[in-house]
Structure formats: structure tokens, C-alpha cells
Image (tube, rainbow, N blue to C red; front, side, top):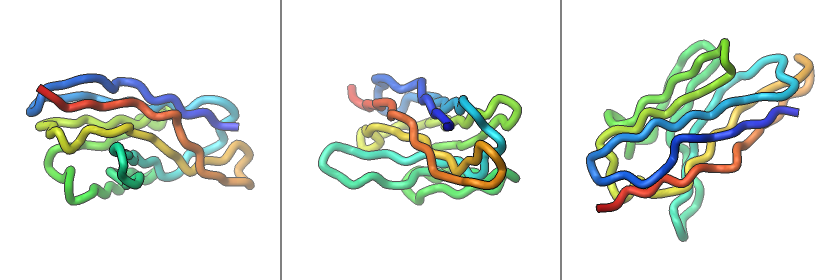
Length: 120
């Protein structure tokens, strides 16, 4: 099994910054693409950013130019640097990863989520 644990959420004023981390642990053979999603109250969960194992990156239009996704493969960790935060960025942020614990069976794993609140 692979466990994902997010950290770094909190309360920040509009225009501020936060850095989220997502650490994978457990029986890990290889991690493929890693992602960040978010879910605002009363809304569906939506993708925010993706980074593949070889570093290809995609962002949702709503966060382009403000958010930066990265990963440290040696630490099995991904990050989301969020700058110029807006109230509409308020949501629970989830990381997820496509991973294998034996090189044969692959599955999608999700973290428990971390709350980000942007408010003055």
C-alpha cells in the first residue's frame, strides 16, 4: 500500500502565498504522475496541476502563472507553491498519485486533504 499525506494548508490573506507538500510512504516501487486537486464547498473536485515522472507539467487555467507544481523523486514528495492567492482558491486540496508497490500492479492513491482558506 501507498499512503499520501498532505501538509502546509492554512489561512492566508488575499495576495499571500502557501506551499503545500504531499509525501508518499509505504511499499513504493515506483510513482508515476502526481497531481493536485481541490474541492471548494458546494462544488465538484477539480484538477489543479499535474506533474509526470519525467517532469511534464500541466495547470488548470485558473491557476496558471500563480501556482507551481514540483516533485522530489528521491523523497517521493510533490509540492504546490501557491502565490497571489485569491478567495476563490479557498478549498480542500488533495494530492493523488499513480503508483505501484511491485512494478506490476498500479493504482491511484489519494491523500486526506488539507484546507486552504484565503480570506482577509
